[in-house]
Image (tube, rainbow, N blue to C red; front, side, top):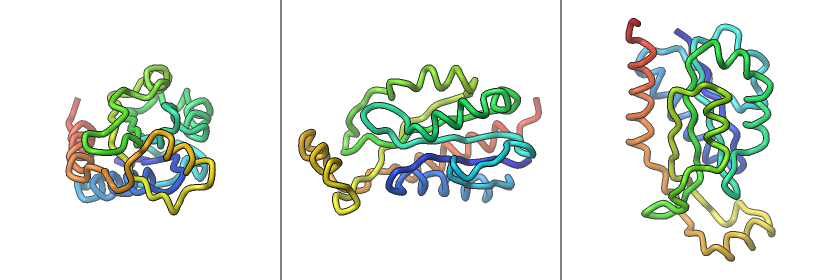
Length: 164
């Protein structure tokens, strides 16, 4: 059993979530490759895919959407799980699903989509991003729910290893 965990991350927070999912799957006995969506050359040899993207302005990053377009046929041939990273604060806001997640879930035939809170460090942002963060009064900090992420990876591992 070999699984690809791929992500599109703008400042690294979503990539860290992907690495945590990969480590969790590996701990549970599943061979796992963790890569950025841009570094994936093929889905050959993978029995499943976990795909995630940072959310900006309510949408997945273009690189993740392009990945789905490029690999749509191959994604239909294996189980797929999707995750989004981006809401901030406690409680996390915005609370609603990303605007494009229904279409992305349908395009991949995803078994599940999860939204995880992200992190925001203003020193990592460009001038335009800082202005946007100030305008919406986004809180700074790391809001990622690590135990919840690990639990979700455990659920994925169980689904992959349960005989049909």
